[in-house]
Image 1 (spheres, one colour):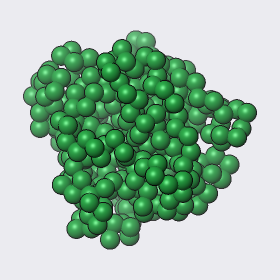
Image 2 (cartoon, rainbow, N blue to C red):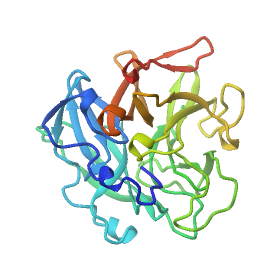
Image 3 (spheres, rainbow, N blue to C red):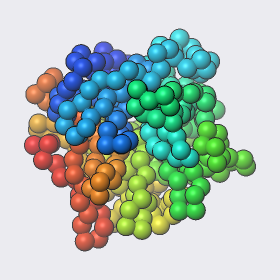
Length: 333
């Protein structure tokens, strides 16, 4: 969820549709989906009022759950004046006996942004351990100071047990910052890396990201590599969306991430994984998981048969002889 300049705003405000209590995957209107499994139940989190939540037992039918935040986090209005609790691009993972939910607050089309985090010991609403506790802001991008945008978070813990948060959109690209062991604050002294970028010019203006349409990092460990997935070009334009996912990989979480041609992603590289077609416009903002021994690619795409509305996509992932991901695009027919 990104640099929009006000484009397609009405659709933005209804992503993760709450029109029905239960919906099949192919009709579920979502944006920026992430997923996790607890006790056989899959939970889907996505952009929406207070962070929208859905649950499923089979990855086919989804039931609407209560949003995470009934009211906006108390600190959000200090970052984005007039913030209305429409929260972008969550990330969910389980560590240290509890679930960590990172999320984005931002002004549309600006790098007036911040990433927060909340925790709960359970995702089951009926459990006595179910309660979201907000820990406030983790990292903030300040207009006319920072050359990056603090949205689209993703937590990765490296092989040494060190936590890192990747994030970013437009401006100078995707960033990686080392977190403290508590996973709710940036480690001191601060350690930062640039993972991928498109724009080479130094841009400072809050509403001027330049020609830098790149966002939504997601790092996945597999086959002895860290794979960096990122979304390129433009989301949020319905049938005119040009979103696509590219990938690079590295033996080190900090990079450099090289594509199939060994071009670094921080120098414009990135091998194509998935893109739109005649039936579906842009496809992107992915996450990737292993559930019960199978890898799944979770993302959204714009349905050309339904006025370009954004829908949930879940595709199987295989790996070629060179250990590169291959997304089976049967549901992108």
